[in-house]
Image 1: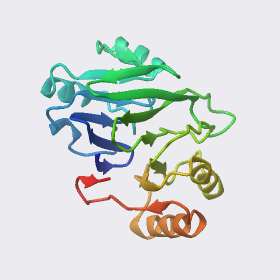
Image 2: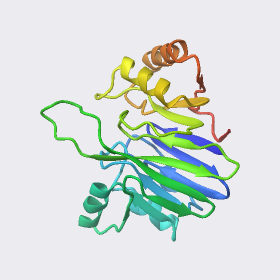
Image 3: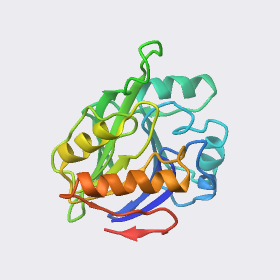
Image 4: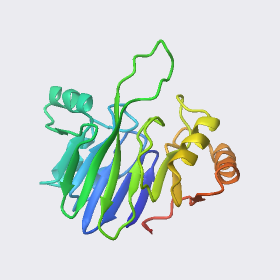
Amino acid sequence: MKITHLGHACVLVETNGARILIDPGAFTQGFEELTDLDAVLVTHQHQDHLDVERLPLLLEANDGAQLLTEAESAAELEKVGIEAQPLRVGAEIRIGAITVTGIGGVHAEIDPAIPRIGNVGVLVSGSGEPTFFHPGDAYQAVPEGVDLLGVPLNAPWAKLSETVAFAQAIGAERMFPIHDGLLLPTGRGVYLNNLRKLVPGTQLQDLSGAGAVEF
C-alpha cells in the first residue's frame, strides 16, 4: 500500500492495483490534476473535505472513476448535477481487488448550536495489504483490525485528549496525521510530539511533503 498525504484530509491510496482519492477538499491544492483514479471517496459535505467547484474537473480527468460519498453529501451533489453513489454505514463496496467499508455515521459535535451532519469513515482493505482507516470528522467509531490510521490532528470539534483516546482505542501499528490544515508549523509540531508521547504503542509517521510512502 502506498499513501500520499496531499494536504489536510485529502489522501491518495494506492493498493492492490487500485488508486483511490479520499476527501478532495478546498484546503488541498492540485488534487484535480490526478489521473488514473478508480474511485473518489468523500466522508462528508464540509468544504475542507469536498470541494464542489473543483470536483467536476477531477471527475472529467478520471472518466469511469466511481464517486462514493456519505449519503447527505450525495444528495447535496445531486442538486448541482453531480451523481454520486451513497456510501452507507456498514456497506461494503468492491473497487477492483479491494473492499471499501462505510464506518460511523455522524460528524463529531462542534457546538450544541451547530446541527450535526452525516459522516462516514472509510475502511480500505485488500488481500495481503494493510487495512487503512480514514475516519473523516469523528472519533466515535472504532473498527477492528486497523493496521494504518489517518488520525485527525486538529479541528474545532476535537481536543487532544479525545485524539489520544481515539488513537489508543484503534490500536493500529502505524498512524499518520491528517486534518492539519488549520495549524501553523510550530503548532503542528506540538501536536505531533504530544501524540508520540501519549500513544507510544502506535508508530507516528509524518507524510507531509513526503510524496508516496509505502506501508
